Length: 377
Image (cartoon, rainbow, N blue to C red):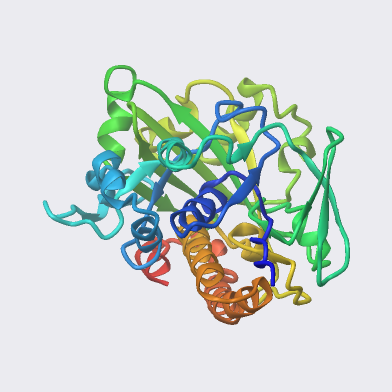
């Protein structure tokens, strides 16, 4: 009897979840190929800073053999948290202890670089934009890419984020707008160019709100600070005001008018930024999202359970990736592994999404959103 050939596994999406899954599989002698639409690893900005938690994200990095590398690059001082009022007065201040490592911060780009460097050469195929997934539920599946390539595989892992193409193969769900909008602003070389902002934010994060609007500021690596200007508003609030989103001056003037009752110290976080704003309306999948089980397609991270940005997204993606990879290493068939993974992941994500459903609206409440509680979920 000829030996059973190893499964052909395709991971779609080279974010932290997809790369961690491929890395843990590789450590167990299982080959996976990762496909990503970007032309290369430096094709675009990878986002801000991430806090990886000891009870999920760090567990995945341990299974990936990368935990010590993470601690070498992470910023434990980034666990500092301040709650301010609109005048800039400090209402709450958490300073991490010298050995506190529950959720150190790391820039998303650095984390991705660590994961990429850990993979065998050729694992990631850049410049592959997935258009459709075809084939029967019990496999094999075919991936059809916009660039013309077609790939056949036994398992497709959708790690392709909020607007997942893989998800369409098993679910009709699409993310819905939550009614809360984030506008992202950047400050560079803050110690020299923006010392007042650097002093206000500290080494970690600072948040404030007045019941209608809020700010959340995060220290990033390399002397950068990223600020999210948070409002309950229609998704098209900028164009609805008759403004061009690319006109930074017009958008800034509107924001400063909306925050006119806040102190000049706090308004610096809104109007002194470097470069344009980035509009980020917040979407989420329905709480408890599930899909038609298929032994040849499964999802992880935002593709499976897009939630409000309250500190759990990347941690759940890494935990999903870890549990899926270990299931594939421990079960005799891909179908058994997918079933075992989903039996654990789906109840967990349903419970977490129910806890966070609507919590994004608390980001503009007069009390600091319970980021610590959200992180612990």
